[in-house]
Length: 202
Picture 1 (tube, one colour):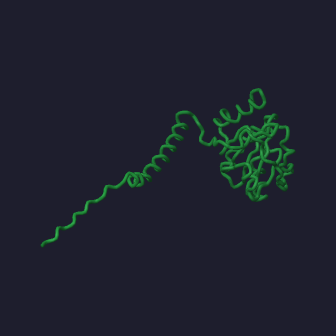
Picture 2 (tube, rainbow, N blue to C red; picture 1 turned 90 degrees about the vertical axis):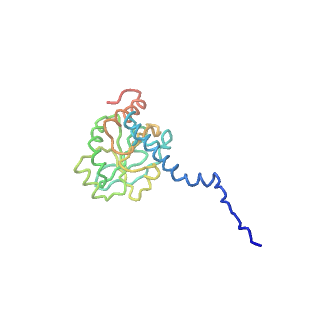
Picture 3 (cartoon, rainbow, N blue to C red; picture 1 turned 45 degrees about the vertical axis):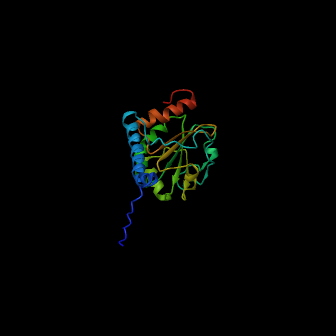
């Protein structure tokens, strides 16, 4: 008597396996869509992707108690250096090429007597920072050194140069990641200054 061979049928794969197989494609599509939207906003709506939102905007600025830059003949960067003044806190370093590009803009801003510009010198060597200021000029009223980057962490720094506009009462009003340019001044910093001062910025 001959045996009848067993016939096995493949079980259909479930929906879970199908979705799992498509997961890398879905993730890639999401990333591509986000990047495309950022580029579209920048190109067609004039949005600056360097204007990164900060959780600190609208809150009190972190405390400042940084040692002075030796040889700069400027005060240390402490709370007293910014209290009661509309202040631009600029994070810079001599090794930062975009900082060098931005520096002439800061020198122009320093001509506006209503704006107090101070600096956090980030992970820099003292002699290099002094050389940087000697070559390009000094727009700052106070400089504090941050050799270990602790203050930068407190301020939520993404990368340098980076600037924060702080109201006379110590509230952070505006943040700029990257060097200032004409668009970021006209559409970002100047309107924030106008709002804080109640009159147009010069």
